[in-house]
Image (cartoon, rainbow, N blue to C red; front, side, top):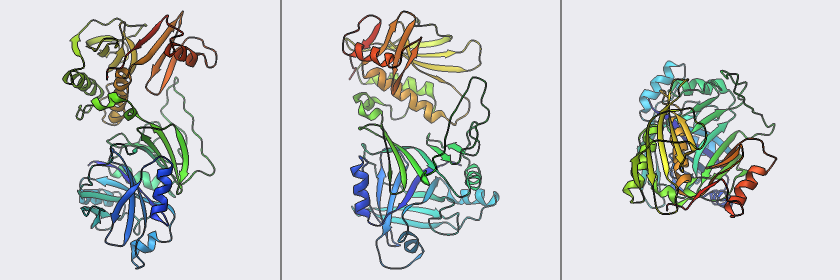
Length: 421
């Protein structure tokens, strides 16, 4: 049974004023339409399936939905999408919940289209603040704005996090091994976090982690990505919202495969095909030499070679010689500098995130610029959203190396290339 985070419901007094607040923060919010029960909404959504619903009372009448929304402010509930609401109800009943019968719901959009679904309350009433409700879409929403926000993480502080965890487990979501019953990742890679997290478990001797609880932390938090802007954090209508720019800010993101399989290796191969089919490069099998010592048995390697001035991109399928398990590597240049390395795990959870890392690596590789700077026993490698360094550096020195290379003031040991697109 597939279950995934669908949307967060945020009650506001004035819908247009709330939408304007979100837009002023650089987050598009547009009118979504009206429900038969008298509520109206605005939607914060982008290419991903998850979104935020700003909702307010659009009628002076009285019914359970209007009476719940009219006096409320801030996040009041959230929805889990399922493919079969009746099967989900049965699973919840078997886990000790008492879900209400599923009822039809709909919304008339500003363009006059009718969007329909079936909804099931798990808590005692509409928009319950302690448990999410279920939704099965029967008439999917229309295409979302291509430049809209993508929800990648949803955090909340429920009254009873263990009860919410029971519900998510009953619906088939797998809890993290490090934050058991406090962090979940759905089939599309979106992370749901229940606070307080508590202490991590199953960490080996080489691992570490840190977390902290803010005393005034809002009841709900979101992490959104946008095609432009900078990293920011603010509170909007009672929701802590963090935004960051994503790969859509680069022209190379237009080459992202629409259907590239369900694993990191398949995704890497799909990128190779997409680049070749776009006429930007050619692919051939190669022997691999590494820019630095990489402990990996190479099973196969394919190199993309592009326009003049660009650096070749190499996809390596390999196996660790000591620890069991295959990996896929996306590298740049010759010899190959590793930009991304992902394990090939047997379990489905986490695969969406691995695919996203592969997408980021290819967009980074195809966008050009400085990839790495090497000096005597020291190196700095630029990654999609940051850098890594090997060797001893003073504070700020790795960034200086990259800045000097980008400005042409440093040329020795620099791996750089022109954009492919």
